[in-house]
Length: 171
Image (cartoon, rainbow, N blue to C red; front, side, top):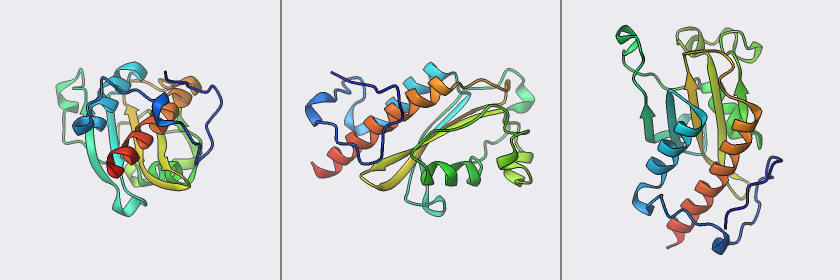
């Protein structure tokens, strides 16, 4: 039985292990399953799971890239904006940008200016009070792709994935 809260969950929330079932996400491919299923639900063109405690040490552990409709946009993919990742690692709430190019939080950022990204969503993965990574999605197709509800959903998925990862590490 999985319970998903409507309000953002606080860091360090205790969810009983028996309440979590991720039967469709095998332990060996936890984040591959997470990003494949979640990217489809929220409609992200690019979706990444990154593990690490700070922006400097984040490592991509899984990614899903949907090919763009225009072949000329199929250039090499770049890592997400460090500022978006930093905000997600420092916050217990989803980071949403309805239009990254116009968002004041990211003005003057080279990685944002050079990208074709319009919409972005990012949440931290937390174990207790410590960040262990992020789930990140974006789209260059249109502004306003991700909703507040998508942020709440992604945050619930992140909590379950972090809990599952912490159980895998203990096993």
